[in-house]
Length: 193
Image 1 (spheres, rainbow, N blue to C red):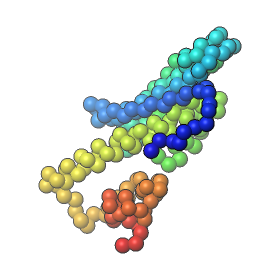
Image 2: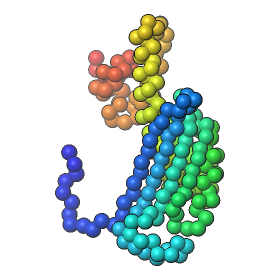
Image 3: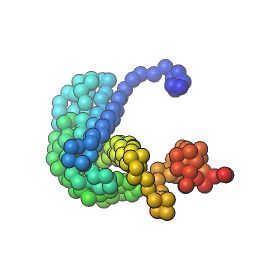
């Protein structure tokens, strides 16, 4: 169901964030993020002159390479459009994110390494959707391959402790007492039986 009809209004700004996840032939994963900010009107900019309607005020890209463990192994960042001359110079510093694990505490770790004057607000914001895209890219494939391995005559030992699913209690839909966990991960269901 879409949003309700809005009040009369004028379109001013569009931010677009696109993220894509890829499995590489070498067994690693690439997640690429792209962000643009576009105005519907032209305006004067001290460093760029006139920015016409539809030309990006911001356009940045980031590629994060990770392993199955979601640890960052490589980062490449590029700034194609920015409001100030020199913004693009900070892009190589995003290599400082190598070694971080995508997961809890990531935002703080990013701020610690490339926050404030040591980074780009927009690239830092882009890392949130990049991390989510990494989960959406990696976990379903690994889960499917694990299930396929079990179905090929390699069932797991019932005495082996079950690993907690990383998504449990990360949102309302994945709450431990909810119907999704009851159905998908019954060993971790905490609701009424």
